[in-house]
Structure formats: C-alpha cells, structure tokens
Image (cartoon, rainbow, N blue to C red):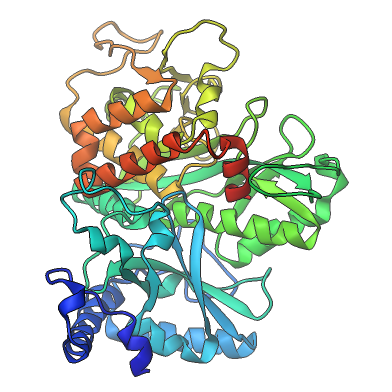
Amino acid sequence: MNNEEDLLQEDSTKDEGNETEANSMHKLRKTRKKVTKSHVYSTEVGEMDISNSNDCMRDSSQILTPPQLSSRMKHIRQAMAKNRLQFVRFEATDLHGVSRFKTIPAHFFQEKVSQGVCMPRGYLEVMPNPKDNEMNHLRATCFNSDIVLMPEVSTFRVLPWAERTARVICDTFTVTGEPLLTSPRYIAKRQLSQLQASGFSLLSAFIYDFCIFGVPEILNSKTISFPASTFFNNHDQPFMQELVDGLYHTGANVESFSSPTRPGQMEICFLPEFGISSADNAFTLRTGVKEVASKYNYITSFFIETGLCNSGVLSHSIWDVDRKKNMFCSSSGTEQITITGKKWLAGLLKHSAALSCLMAPAVSCRKRYSKDRKDLKESVPTTWGYNDNSCIFNIKCHGEKGTRIENKLGSATANPYLVLAATVAAGLDGLHTSDEVLAGPDESTDFYQVEPSEIPLKLEDALVALEEDQCLRQALGETFIRYFVVMKKYELESEERDAERNKFLEYFI
C-alpha cells in the first residue's frame, strides 16, 4: 500500500519538486487523518436498507455518530455479500455534471472508506492548465495534482445496470484535507447549510428531457450519423421500465415518465426530496440512462438540437426547518404564493442573468431562450406566472405537492448541483434583501412591482453578468466563479476548432 500512498501526496505550501519521499509520506499520514476526521463523521444519513428501498422524503441532514457509521458499514457488507459484488465505483461530478469515477475491488471498500481514493484533479475540472494571469490567486501546480474522493456512505447502492458493481457518491478534497472549492456538490451542500441556518429546508425535484437514438455508424469529433430511427414511447417500454426500475434501486424514485412531443424525446420526473438528494438523483440518471441504453443498442443525449426542448427543470419549495410546513403555500386557500415565496421569487428574478450562465452553460442550449424570435435582440425578459408552463419561473399552486416554483432556466446539460446551489443562493438573497414584493395581475396594488429582468442570449454576455453578480460570487465562492468563467471562455475560444454540436453531443451521451 505504500506505493499507492505515494501517489496521493501534494504540498500546497512548498514546491513539490523539493520534497523528499520521507516528508511526503509523513505529510500524507497526517492528511489522511484530517480528511477522515472531517468527512466520515459528517456523512449524511439515508435509509437503512441501502440496497433496495428509498423514502422520497428521507432525512439526509443528520450527522452519523461512530456507532451509526459502524451500523451502516455492517449493512453495506451484508449487501456486498448478498449481491456477490466484485467492484465499487467511487463517483464524483465534474463541472459539467458528468460522472468521473475510480473503480476498486470490493474487498478494498472498507479500507477506502477511511482512506479515500485518489484521482487527478484534471478529471473533474476538465480544462487544460489555466494561464497564470487568469488564475493567479491559485498556485498553478495545483491543477496537476491529485484530489481525494471521500465516499458518503449513505449513497452506497448496488447498480442494477452494471454486473456485480456498486457505486458510492463522493465528496472531493485536496490531499491537505480541504474541500475542493470548485466541487459543485460541495458548493450545493454549503448553500443548503446556509438555507438551514436561515430557518428553512429545500424540497426539490428535477425534471429532465433527453433524446434516444439508434447507435450511429460513425461517432467522433467530426461526424455523427444516426441510421436508426428514434422511437415513440410505446414502441420500447422495456428500455424505460428497466431504467426506471434501476433508478429506484439506486435510491432515485421516478414519479412519472413520458414522451412529450416527438419520437425519441423522453421526460423523467423525480419525486421531490429534501436536501442534496434531488441533485444526487439527477446525477445518477445522467450515468444510468447511458448504461441502460447501451444494453439496447441505443445512445441517449441530454444535448438536443434547437428544434427540441432540452430542459432541466428544478421544481422546488422551501419549508420550515422542521419540514412540516411549505412556506410557499398560502393559508387562504387561494392559488397565490405567500410573501415569503414572493421574496424568494424576487431573488430568482434579480439574479436571472447570472443564473442563466450556470444553467444554460453552452452556446446552443441558450438558443431556446429566444425560441422562435426573429428579432436581433441581445436579451429576453425573464417571465413568471401562475400555472403557466411558458414562463421561465412557473408558480404551480395545484395538486398534492402544494405550491412550488419551477425554475426553467436550466438546460439538461447543466450540472444539477450547480442548478440547485445557484437557485438557493438567489432565493436566499431575495429573502434577506428584497424590499419589494411581486404583485400578480389579480393582486392588490399595495405590492411593489419588481422591474423585469433580462436574460442574455449570448453566453459571453451571461459570463459578464455572472462575474458582476456580487451575491453569487460570494455565495458560490470566488475560486469557483473565476475557474468556471475561465473554463467557459476556453470553450468559446476553441469552438471553431471543435464544432460545438459534435463536441457536446459526444461528451454528454
């Protein structure tokens, strides 16, 4: 194991080239203790039957005590024996929301729970080394270093679509034991903590569109061909049934699925859950749908041509900290949102320009904002309304779920953790700073009318809006914002050399 340990070493304060092997080993031992102490005992609680059941309202905010961790590891060992597991994936999200993982033999799992698994940092940040003048507040060699994947054991699940394999979602740390500041899951957790500190909880669910194609004869960065026809919903029920059943067994409960508009287009709606679980479910779907599709000789893509909707909607509401009352629901029984909800919505509207940069992060996926507009305007107004699916922010006030807001800024290509984090950050700002309250068309004029926000159609303009949004910069972190902007500028610069449609379609399938 000593050779493996050597690979994990990084020194954040000295030049790596000047370290001796003895110093590296000594520092690594201290680092592992620090990472284990800071992460394992803050692991969130999920349901106890880790291999099968899942409660759509499960509590994932408690902190595991050492006895609870021991009990959970006992259940994991039982599940591994029952399913004769051979491998466990340690999964983490990159900045695009794509799963990056290291797979280990199952008999090493308990050891790796405490030690973590190392991975090159570049796997998650998916960009060549930034220029010194772009990221001069960080040491350039950090981008060539390793990070440590520390598993959140409550997310351990047997994968139905992978033979004798389980997965566990990981949080990412530097080898000095600090959270990776560009980690979308870390940023989302931090915002949920801020929300809880303000006396609220988030109940949310993602609604995803994606397309299913026949396997192409050629697939590379230059040519894509789809000789097989896409299919209607009722032509291939076994594929969707296997996908939905597999998602259930991985802890992601699907509420419904449908073929909304045309052949090959599918929509999946998850059941709402509190906390980080909704983003975990979306993250699981993005990997699971690709693996199930390969068994049926299909390709699935979350990157869809302009003619098709490629939405990634976040339906959400905020509740009191005890999770007993929906703070958006009016007690009057009318189909109106509460003042708390209006303040939250005001925050979303206020920051919609910057939010759009994180939620529609590619040039082509921003085209849906303009829809069929033929004018040459550089931006479009942000719209909101009650029970109006054409609006960017749709307030739904009917059904058993109670009042909720659908944030439809998101593209299916966006990272779900960033969508969740940015939504919470903007909503919290509305709660804390908004002196104006939205007035609906049928409401009293005592409410002030918030000025309409504008959504940039160009990604370049959205990047400027994100850089200038001090609230989101502070909430999501200066390091993340600067890195995200540099990454997107690099993608824009390389667009001519690597046609965006081919690049992103190949990446997101």
